[in-house]
Length: 435
Image (cartoon, rainbow, N blue to C red; front, side, top):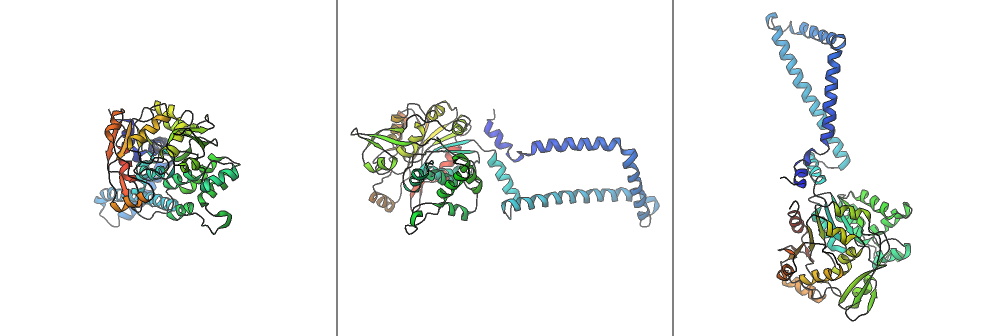
């Protein structure tokens, strides 16, 4: 039996037309009935006048015995000419409207079909934060525009931390990165969102324009952070939506292996100590209702990639999120990091990333683990070793022994940095849909 998602994908090009087609057919039937009822009184006299006029013209061109045949041929030619004019006119109008709205100059039909297919794509939920989540979203948006990014809100460093302290708002940095990753706007606009003021910019030093814009939009909407995100989403024409896991102001609290407690994401990473447990401060915060709804209706859910303690686990600690993930009937995959992170996951293998999550979350929130088996170049390994980062060992057998399905392959992309290839990861995630 065909799955719900595959049926939606099959019908994607006709989405939006079914209702319009029904209205058109009903209108055409109404017109036909109305024409029949008023045919003798209104339409028939007009048609007879047109026929007499055409006959007067044709009788000068063709013999009288060929007049009836010539009239039929003229009528057929006018029908085809009229049909061609209608189709050409409608097509030109649609192309003009699409070009005006999108600025696109070629392949309009392809663009339309592509966007219709994306609109009917699978419902994807991605949880995390930092650069890991935004990298993944760049790949997922090639398959669907029904994406919900659920973002952690515990960042207390840099521009986000300053705005949180000065304005009491939710840190916007990770949300900004996800908005840009899902954007369909011009590159110049996304570059503007990501621009960060230099050290010579006075009080603006270190701030990104995107963070300041989100703060300004929150002010315009009387402190409503949700409205600010929606407005920023409209500006960037994003494919999907970005929501915080909670609208409450929270901090991270960690218990280290030596028993000490540390508060604040920045302080936790700077300790350099192995982390035993993570908590939110306060511990009980309300989850975002949109996040819970998206999880319940998802076709596939991605957790990570990202810093396991400060990007992945914080979302799972929000009250109700882990339970919603446990109950979601769709495939759920944890995307393990490619490289370790200093002060947080030093020397961690893939299975130790999984163990860290299991130690902090009581519920079983995923059933698959995506593990990279690709190896960076020796020069990249040396570069990362100098900064205290190492390739995450893909000990897949240990993960299988924990009861998880392992999706192991080369998912790596190496440029000036080593990270996941968003297209490879997204393709693998999409292969889980409908299973």
